[in-house]
Image (cartoon, rainbow, N blue to C red; front, side, top):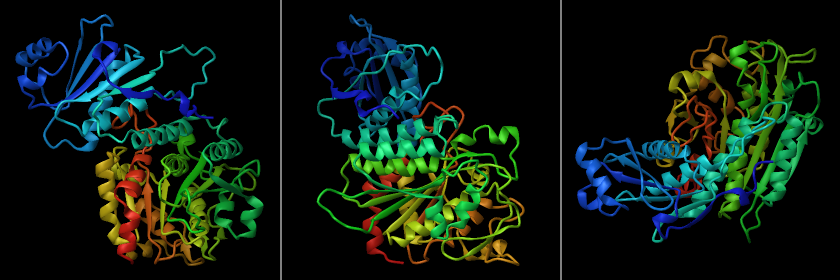
Length: 494
């Protein structure tokens, strides 16, 4: 199980700088001598400032002369810095302080209040320990206190829930595949549901067969066990009883993807234990909504399976029937994510949510288009796209819109079935995959698909300094709670 909430650093009010192991301050490059005078031991900062003017996105470090020898880290931002740039700077500042292994840090800003949330997000990410399997892991000093200015307007509950959700995604995604297999994942999901008061049901392979979910079952057929299934979790706000969800969060949970019969090469398979990160985003977002007691009725639908070769594995040129009756001609068994999601989307849509939002590490084509710095977004509801892009911009988890025009369906026409699983070549596969998924959502139901190109990135991303980024939770919470997209959808029906 991931670390308990009690293991998180306490967020307290900053009293004196002398009580801290490290002090992190963000200020604009245009800072004046008077601004620097507000820092502890200001003369050293004034002298540094006079020696060389700071540049945006740079960091300066010194040690204060108090009893604790507090490490002081000063980061500079330029005018009009984006949220992503603020997060990136905050991550760099936390990395500078890491060698000191601080147990208490203070966070503040001078004339840059919007940077405080970025600093807090970076601190909570840096304090989180990813799973370790070493027999003699070194005991590291753990960050215990994060001190904020007494007059901060920052919503620390929201910031803490968002960070905890991101860290949960990182923890799950980093687990090795012999720990987080289908059975282990179901156990973790069940325990998390109990911990956070979520209702949960599990649709195993027999139940999915009764529902005609043969696209999902085709992927599961190569597994040596029968532990695959779809987890359905529910959160309902206090004092609100409703069967219908405002939003259904759908996630791809392929806990290891060999490629199936179309076996991946060594390098392509090496990180395929991370192919379940879409399901982790959906799960962690639901938990964050529950922690915040958000006024949103939400479901999560998690498609959990491995994709293995074997005597019963599905093969190219098979024709399978999905839960909505559509027949699919299989082209490549390594396009398993869209098969598992197809039936999951059908089941989620049957509950008639106000919005379906799915997350998946679906295509290499999206990574080739964007690199791992952003993720791709698609929607069948044009009025929704502006909110999706705005949520990416204001959360610092940037997304880029791609077309979903109907003429792309020509590349998915099949001579023997209702549609092809994918095209034979890889051109625009992220777009074709989205068009494929759209066939399993009613056209009048608002739906957005996030292709998680940014789920992992060597060297980290933004404020996250590990390869597993946890991308998606900040974006989803921003979209649902701050952009208030559900209200916008009610105001602009399709």
